[in-house]
Length: 276
Image (spheres, rainbow, N blue to C red):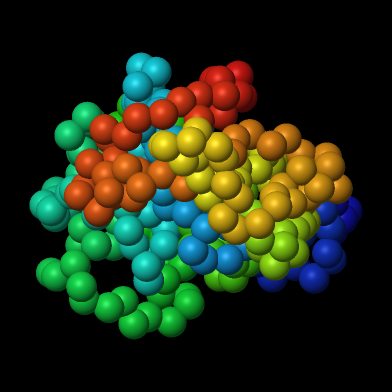
């Protein structure tokens, strides 16, 4: 701090550490009535790898273990979380703020589709508005007694991931990928973005890793050989889980019954999150 400091940082040109910290601090506090213990972001380098599916299954898995869970759907232009949980009602509010909608098993959900008049209405907004909406899901929604909040982020390394990483106190991220070699390159971009912003990476989850034939019992690699172990080794990360192509899971999402999925693929991930 300069000897001439008058503590008026807004007009200061000294460039001291205090000024830099204030100018670079974009963090937002959650609603004063919220209680959120852990925040885990779920990201992917590209679309179509099952990021929202993994987010939903993680929330369900942690709920089955006795934790209060929530999902903040930050994929504003492509929200799919309400559909997976079969939510048709709209979010409500009061003079104090907005309330998330609870699923059948008590998972709190907030998504832009819970605010639109029709689920099929497109969200034709520019980046700054989308980013502000995500921040409002954090600051204006009353998240009561949440042990684990999962943030379903849109694919890529654009406005929303940047907004989330800068505005929300994220305890760690899980990167979702699929076996294709092209995806491997794009996943590296997502990992490097997190590293640049000093966001802890819990590990990698590979979706659509294989298909297990119900007749012969053999595993078939529909999308080719996996490259996730190479990526993990390159970035010194853990491979948390490899999810199969399971028609029953897809059917559960389509019917809004993801809370009834059968499988323990994500249990090891849940154990790691417990220890964070």
